[in-house]
Image (cartoon, rainbow, N blue to C red; front, side, top):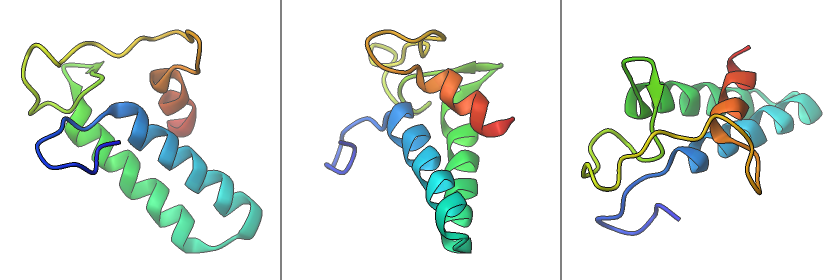
Length: 88
């Protein structure tokens, strides 16, 4: 969770939140969910993308914590590919 003070914020939290909001919008038609998804995607682009690379932690994190986000699914879905799907 990224709700604790002084903790890095993680890409997957924002991507999967945005995806859930899109799904809720599709089911309910409620514009609040659509707005949440758009704002989360904009936040993700602003805070996790640098020179065309998405990172697992936000750009302000220490270099030890900053790693490129995996492009392919592992034991769970890749946040990068999920995010690309949301943008498409």
